[in-house]
Structure formats: C-alpha cells, structure tokens
Image 1 (cartoon, rainbow over the protein chains, first blue to last red):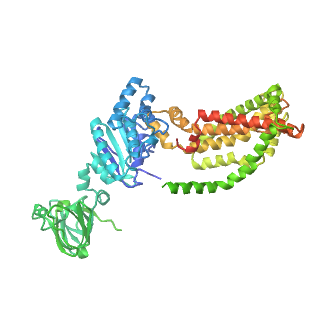
Image 2: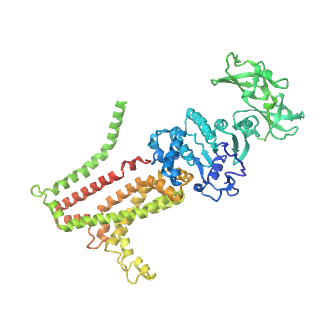
Image 3: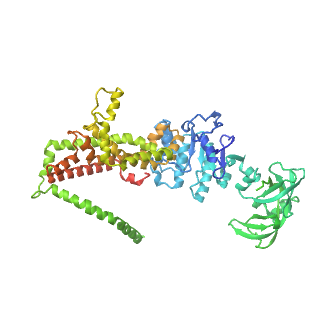
Length: 351
Length: 282
C-alpha cells in the first residue's frame, strides 16, 4: 500500500509550514519521513541541502513533538528537558543554563523537580516542546501536538507556539487536521489528500483562491452550486448558468472550456444582502440572486442563514451580528450579492 | 460523597469476603497451627529453633537454599529479560507465537518435565551424547544429581514466571517514548539504557522477587535432579515430616523459611518500591 505518492515540497528556512489534511491523507507519513521514522521507497529528504535518507532519526538533529507528548514518565521536568543535552555530552553548567532558558520560554519555570504525572496535559506538552527546542534543532517537527487539549487551551497554545517560533526563527513543520489551526499559525500550508498534495501556499491564498474543490471544502466552508460554463468574457471570467437558470460570473481555478459542467464555490461570508453597506462596495459587476430565508442559526458572533434559491440550489450565508444589524426573518425574501472574484469554478467530476 | 465512598468500600469488602474466608480457613488457620507446633511439644519450648541455629548442617542447608535460589533467579533474569523484550516489541504475530511457546510448558505436569530433563541431562543423555560427538568433551559432563542439574531444572520451570512478569510491564511502556528518545539524539543503546530499562525496572523487580520466593520453597526439582549434597530447605522439612516424624522440628523449619522469605520481601520493598509494580505506568 502506498501512503504517500509524489510529494515534493520546499520549505523556507525559519518559516512555519503546515501539512494539513484529513486522516489517512499521508501528512503524518510525510512528517515521519522527514523525521526518519519512515523511509521513502523512492525520493530523498534534504535538510540544509544535506540528504537525510541514509541517516537514522537520532543523527538528523531534528526536534520532534509527538501527539502523545511522549514525556518520559520516570524523569523530572528538568531531566526531561536536559535529556537531549546529556546525550550530546553538554557541560553541566551549560545544561543548567539552557534548560532554565527553555523552561522560561514555555513558562514552566519553577516546575523543574515535578514528575510528568503531576502535570496537566497542557503542561506536559510544554515540557515536550522545551525538550525538542533545547538542543537548538535545525527544524522542529510537530505531529498534531495540540490534538489532545481542550479548545480554549488549544487556541491559547496556538498563539504561544507561533510566538515561540517567531522568537527563535526556527523552521517548523506542523501536522494537523484542524484547518483553523493551520490558518492561524502557518506561513505556508500544504493541503494533502489521498497521499498527494492538493495545493501549497500561504493561508490567505489557499482560503481565497482554492485550487480544487477539495481545498475549498476542507479549508473553511464553501457553498457549492452546480452549473455549466457558458462563455468567457476575455478577462478570465466565465459566465455560468446554474440548473435553475441563475446566471453569474466566476473565475476558473483551473483552465475551463465552454460548455463544461462546473461547480462554483463561494464562501458564506462573501455573500451579502443587496441592501447592506457591503454590497455597494462590490460595484456594478456583482453577481446577484433572489432567495428565501429557510433557516436562521445563531452562532454568537454571527448568524448563519440557509437561503433557498429554488431550482438553483441552497446556499448558506454568514452575517456578523453587528450593532444595528437588521436580521432577516425566516421566510423573508432576500437579494444576495457577491463578487465574481470570490466565485471559484472547478470542473465538475461526474459523481 | 463520604457516604458514597463508604458504600463503595463496603461493596468491595463484600466482593473480597469469599476469598478472605477461604484464605483464613485454609491458609491462616493451618499456619497458626504450624507456628504453634513449632514451639510446643509437651509444653512450650524454643528447643527446635535452638536446634536449627546450633547445628551447622541446618544452617548450611539454609545457606544452600538461598544460594541456589539466587543463582536460579539470575539465570532466569538473564534469559528472560531479552525474551520478554522480544515478546513486547516484535510484531504481534511473532510475539503471539513466542508467547504460546513460553506458556506451553505450564500445561504439562512439573514432574513429567523434570523427568524429561533427567533423560536429557543424564550420563548417556542426549546432551552429553551431542557434546561428545561434537568433540567438546571426552567423557560425559556431570549435569545431573548436582547443583548444575538443580539450577538447570529450576530455571527451566521458573523462567515463564520471569518472562510473563517482565513482559506485562514492558507492554505498558509507550513505544512513542523510545521514538522520542531517538528524535532527541539518543542511540539505540542510549534509548534503551535511559528510557526503556528504567521503565521496565518494576518488571525486573517483580519477576526477580517472584522467582526468588518460588525458588526458596522448591521441592520436586531439587529432590529429583540434585545430589545428596544439594538438599534445600523444603526437602529437609519433608524429611522431618516423612522419615523422622519430628513434626515440631519441621514446623520450626517452615516458620524460619517463612520468616526469611518475608524479610527478603520487606528488604526488597525498600529497594524497589513495590507499589510501582501495581501502579502500571510509573
């Protein structure tokens, strides 16, 4: 069985790089090949231009944080963090100094003599992080390190990780299935699926200009409308017609031909009501459609409306709950507007 | 909360009750009888204990018992630890097969197995035949009816206890910890010495203790495979019961054996905190 096929990535030094994908997409296998715990049948891994494939994990000098923390249960916090330095025969004085600095970095000063079982999950994860950083590895590999933490702590740790990474200028390769986490922390994200790479780019580019339907669906949320590409207008925009006759303009994510069945993807927050202030900014070229509010779902900072477009389909829109907002009632008729730029067209694959 | 905990405790006691009753009836009561007999013969006396510690032969038997037990324990540890390591770290399919091989001897009577060893180790046994055929030795090696025979036989019988105890602790060690050690720069030896070995110590402690205590009271194997000079304390007790019919002296010997075992247990407990064995992942 092939877990990863034809993956080729270049990661800039000092950047925060994330491998994002659902389980079974090959992201962890890719990371393990970098770490040396899995060997590629073909291909090579280079770190600083040096080939790695012939080296066992312990000779690669890469820091690694595991999902299960893997903090040594029989060693104190101090001894855990000192472990890589003792292996490298660092002098006692320097160990003292560097372990202290590493624990300060993850804000665990004063925990030196505790045993892992006396620590919370978040604290154990910080120990693992300090341990992986203390020997100043060239690259820090992280395999879903925050997966076991609750949401609030996870959000907090995301920011902290990002700050630490920026502070140390260390290259991080991060594996996660959580798209929000990937968007928050990364300089660059590679979306993986089925053992291959779907798209690589900075978070905003991936979010705003997904290259495939999978990326549009997996990263954030998208409304999908089935339609047919009618004609190109010369500026790279396509006039499309949906099943119910709705016409709109969109941008092809990949080259498209006239008459081709396509799926159009639009983010819920890019759809605005025509009478809203935001709609004016779209200008005269905006797409519009009429619909009926079928359902309103209150999510706190925003309200999501399911809007039926008749035979054209159904879309979800997301409206921030601002001061003075006049939310449409269920059953009300609304006019929606959105930019052709925010309409990504993908060739439709026969289901 | 308090009352709920109380109820929980009471329920636990209820579950323990049958076992406690059986133990009290079949273990504690006869034990008290033995203790009583060891100081009573037509009036209370300590003469039997004095006899043990005054006559050198008995002390020699005690010393021999401890020595054989210690050697057997070390042999079991040296053979059993690597085996348990393979069992705990290899792929499940291989491990399962090896495990069956380890446990299989338990299904045969210890007497049958001991006789089998006697056939193998005798002057004209298979082992000696091969050793001579291969030119390792000119005349048969004395492998039976001496201490070597006792150690071979006992180690064989007790090895599974060591393997299973060590294995159960090793299985609880997260393989991710060894990988973490590698990722931090530790070689195979370093990862083993600094991470795996210390985490498997409770297993070593438990297995060593178990084998040593079982060795102290061993009877069949030393009786069949040992020579006249290899008497162990259990055999001495048997002789006092069966031949000299000196039950009070036999009782005193049994109490001494029990006391020494308990002392060993307590001493061990101080070195390696035994709770860790039962705590699983320390």
